[in-house]
Length: 440
Image (cartoon, rainbow, N blue to C red; front, side, top):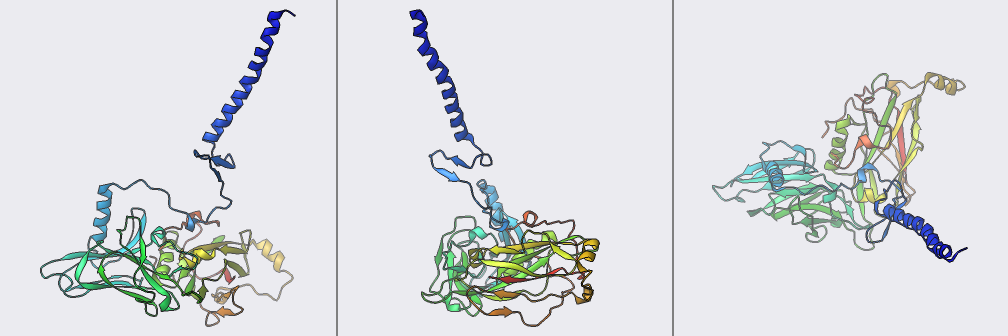
């Protein structure tokens, strides 16, 4: 072997090794920069910190609202103009600037006036003399159904009222105005009003307004306003005392028509306030859902754990489509007033399947519409050995649901169960499928 040939061997060897190694390093770096979440388990952020993939997907009603582009000045002006345009006594439900709002507006002179939001228990009274003689002021009363506007709460705090705004923001009067809305705290002395001295589109800055119980009666908050802003009520029990609020469970389903094979039933966990129920009714409106049976009232404490909603009985001829007969509801979603709901989907059994299952049981007669009725459920709490049942043994189904009018964050079309809008039309009251029970 000549010397020239031996001098080229090391360089050739390094060249053969260096090119594949450099290519591999470049490929790895590209993957680190551009890796999609669905392809890799973790992606490295620009600052080098590793972000793990979420292990569980939240339900639709808890999804955080996506980032929206900043509103332009004309959009903001149009937003407030619509809120303060007189509604002539009507209560308007409308989504403006990605916020679902219920509002009413009017002009007020020296004689005063009153604004009320229908079916919500919310009112604003402007007394005579609050506006100077010869002047007219436009005022508005707004129920905010955007959950992101509520105060950030600790585990010990509970939301017991809606978020209410009086407008225009910062307006002041010669005499105090009175804002009234409902709360669901069991002890009025534990209900503390909060105020955010910000406009509706600004970031909220919630602060206590007076001492706990200063503005609360048995089931109502009444605040004398020196100027207009945002208000709500938070449950804050003293140290050593249990915080408790009243919770209502409302069951909705879409109407059942002849030949329909599937039916979805949805159970809402709501504060016991009129506007919370309207929140659920409005959420059901696009899908034809109606309230079935009376709402059930429960004593709910901040010391409870996550709640489990479990099917106890299914009417003959129906079966559960879901993998499980029970569903878990996080405690804080209820305690912080997020109005969560859980759904079960049912389908009719085929005639052949029903014949095979019930052939040995000849003593069982098939269900008829006259025997179908709403049965009260049983709530078993992990911190109580008692069982609370609704008064009465049976409550017949109403011939029709209430007029629909509230939920900003939930989307039934993306619910976990097999929602079928085409299979859900108006209910006749016959073949009511399941009744249900709930255990903690």
